[in-house]
Length: 241
Image (cartoon, rainbow, N blue to C red; front, side, top):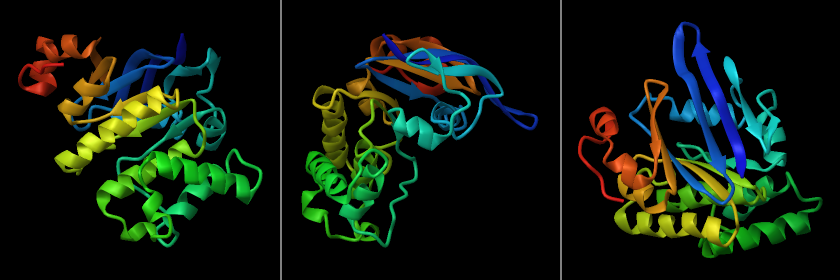
């Protein structure tokens, strides 16, 4: 069952084609990787899916209904959350208050928002940092806070934009565990952009590859890791799943 269907989506900025006729589906309970070189159109695709950009052509469907004309806050209420490549916490607020601010999109009281937020912070391993100002958190914890804020909106789908960038090997392994638990324990479907091939190969069920705004391949991690077109355009060498 497909939760999101991207149908022949193109996005132009003036004369620049950032995406050209891209189609793929995100199935329920799936982790779908989205990879490609810098400038391939990955984050633009996220921005189209979550309503920040409207496609120049094509459509995005959520549970079979066209949502290409909806704004991000509406899509968030419909169950589509996202993180950002550059983490953007509310720097003068505590870790807990950052998550509470996100939880309010679905909760009706501060008590309920706080309850949800404490559960999410426990889940992401940030319980010891609830009173720390977010600007004082190291990068690894700020990345987890970004995920916690998205989870506090109680999404059905989460879009993770380079949630592993800048992390050390230990933090990468911890983050992989969190991403896997988001699916197995929370039942949330995931679309993930990532440059770390170790991560993509470890967590993805399928992978879509973009290059110069076009889809050049789609398949399992093993298929993508041995695809000569992908190797030439992006990987540089074969990758093992």
